Length: 267
Image (cartoon, rainbow, N blue to C red; front, side):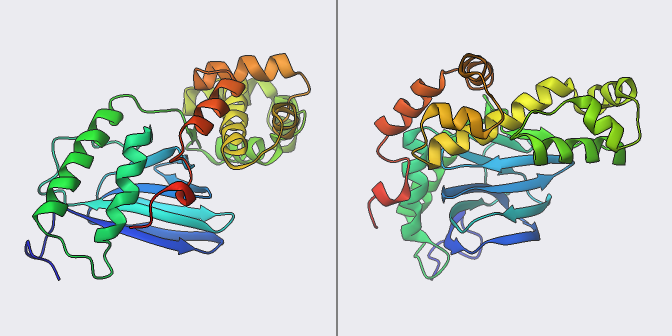
């Protein structure tokens, strides 16, 4: 039942989704993709975007999305009607969700697509959430990996992602792809805007944030798991990418009792 006509301001989609290798999606509405638990990777416009419980990905209407779900997740995402959504940036963005924003998204489950009544209260709440999201879009995060346009660079990026957990050098990847290290280094910068070392660091830090968010591993174990044998090097890299030391990052997560869906009220 919809008390506001056929095109409500927004709709909540909340469901558990099983592990899947790849699925292609496209939405006629603007899509705020959020994992309340678990994580997933979205490929959009030659970039990989990573969803974790503290992040969301803003996907403008009409964008094709290839989703990969390595483990089961709980999805709690919002579809916004483009005709009534406030002025926004048309680019795909990963945004950091404040505790308030995460709590508001979870609250929207009461108006889910499976029978929830979209009344004036729901409409007002969705508009308030939209304002919060638009504000967060002004400071997008780097939880995405540029995949490159050529086969050479795309393969180099994929190999970097596959092997980030161990010591790896660009020369190794260049040799496997039958390219010179100098040529591959230049092409990576041209197509991704990042030096290969910066690309590797970003891959590792995305993985590190996922482990710090979703596991109880000690920070030294997290560092080793993402390819760092030096704790100080890991701490420095993490602060460059995240703005916080890994210990402070985890403390902030623990302070936020709404980080995990299990801690949120069941509406």
